[in-house]
Amino acid sequence: MRGLTKEYVIRRLFMYVLTIWLGSTLIFLIPRLVPGDPIAAMVTRMQQQAGYVENSAEIIAAWRARFGLDAPLSIQYLRFLRNSVTLDLGYSLTQFPTKVTEQISKSLPWTIGLLALATVISFILGNTIGALMAWRRTPRAVKSLLPLSLTFTSVPFFMLGILLLYVFAFGLKWFPVGGGYGRGVTMGLNLEFIGSALYHAVLPALAIIISSMGFWALGMRGMMITTAGEDYMVLADAKALTPARIFWGYGVRNSILPQVTALALALGGIVGGAVLVEYIFSYPGMGYLLYQGIVNNDYTIIQGVVFILILTTATAVLILDLLYPFVDPRISYQRR
Image (cartoon, rainbow, N blue to C red; front, side, top):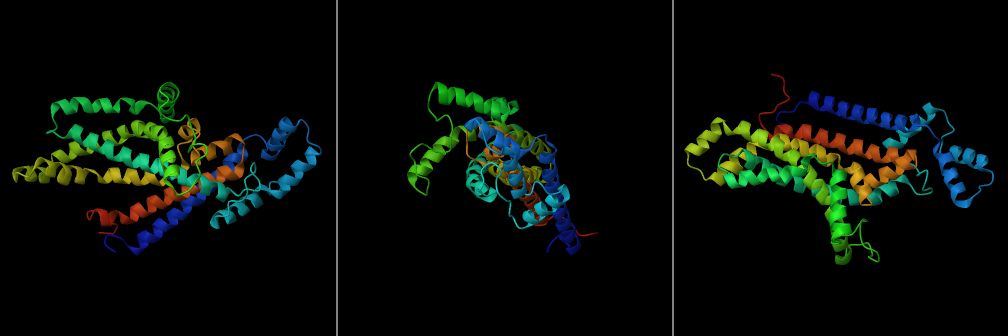
């Protein structure tokens, strides 16, 4: 393989496994360091709803034994590692007998559909704006307007989401307040459901796009400024190539590689969801599922969602690292 060596691939695979193991260990320990018992909290909620739960102490003990929480921490850890390897993430503590994998499989498509599309749109718009800001042939009127598109870059996702919700949902009533699709709509591959899902995704997607495209724009602007003085740009200009060809074929093409790296990492991490955005819009994605797990102190939900996030991000980094020599021939892992 061009630019790759067997030793480097083995070393990267080792680091890949080590990263997942360390991340999994942390997500096992952190929820257990939080004060409180998830089983006792669940029984307490039952008491608040029913007024009284008979033999609550026996119920707590039985459920702790059912979920293996009565075992020593070391035994729980070994069981967790075994289940993680087999992707058997266990049962939800608060939604028993629903499995964690079942809840994730329901939430993951919503998050991928929302965040993947929003991230790609933000990437395209942001990089185009950043490249135009640095391109010396961009008309002055356009250059003066482009920074206005980055006004909301410093505003967090959730704050912009609240603003959009207030203006377009509560004020103008152009979009729904929340949810993934309308009431009475049957889920499935039909035009009614797809249209309703897209309609409900507009505001959360806009919150993500408007807030994040400035990140791409600023990075691309810096790379384009660096590229502008390169010899191949001067040569392309001397050959009297069209401005569009110089801009896209020489400027953007040679500046985009670091941005593609960041895009791969962003796409690898989207399964974690935009927690606060999904919560504000009651969007049924992974972020909202993780929020529910944290609020309810549901160990298995927290572990399952974060483990999938670690796995996908580490995989994206590994694939990107191994593909680098094919994307850019200048990159080589062979010893010289």
